[in-house]
Image (cartoon, rainbow, N blue to C red; front, side, top):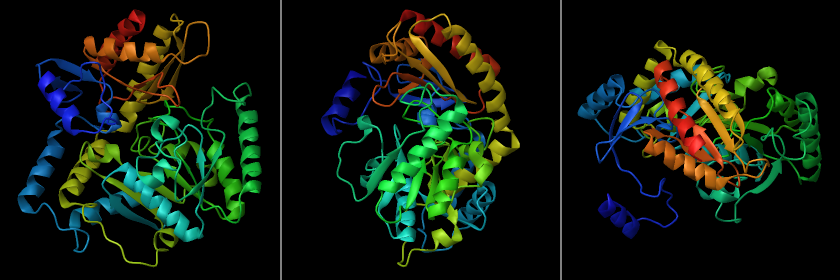
Length: 427
């Protein structure tokens, strides 16, 4: 592995992050497990950053990819593409957005980039509202709206971004308030922010549950309250569902549905889980918004026949096997198990999340100070115990991120919790 690591460092950028002091090469996977090049087996509780949504090497997906690749691999959007139309029809119907149109991309970054293009073109404004602690991708425009300095390498941007309170419930100036008072204070902050904006703001973009930010979320209904204010000004709402979509939260198919009182978002972005590892992203928007571009466009690789075939097979499997329900049931058991474990550990400030999207925030014992050292140590110890997890958390990367494939079994949840307990106690 040292040889491959040396080769990696010789040709890859220094800023390309790698997990672990001794990075591992994953060679194959099956179900909820993966294997390293040294033959070691790991229980996967991170799924390639919430991307292996159903299972590793899912036969239905691998068969669909193989069969489509045997027919035609590529054509571009300049030609009619049956798998693309079929997947678009299903996504549009599931989105909850009326008269929906779907545009496919190759990643969540590109999906958010396209959503920003649509919103700014439709509203004729380059002003964007974003949430503090947010992450929306690595392109020039999406970095410009990311409210997380660890993932924002430049302050230059084609957009003017104004950051709103509300995405982090347990920290910040409103943390001590009850849920209703917290929401009211954030709405007041939004109104005040709009009073400082010049002209018409294009859109608010928000992750219903922040991913890289450490699986933080506001009280249910906050974005519905925001939308009432936005509607007064004609401002669009973009729901970034790259990590929360497809039933991962258990309670809802989309994260925005926890804030559904004021209706669906104007624009929804998705990626990651729908492809189960294949490169699929996309944007869903009302036809009025999607069709507002007054120039031609294409996508060379978005909507590829192979990735669309994978997405169709994966979505079919997810729906037919009620993986959303499994995320609710098994995720509920896992989060309660982790809360019971962590209640006795002063290094843990909070266990939070929904379904199979769980964050464990680590602090210096006896304080609220983020503990990056402990998070790094737990990541390493969990790997040594045979468990792969992630980490994140705003400015500090002190939150452990637990997000297994949605087909996780109760036995695997218990096994993973036991390994994580040992790693936390070692920290």
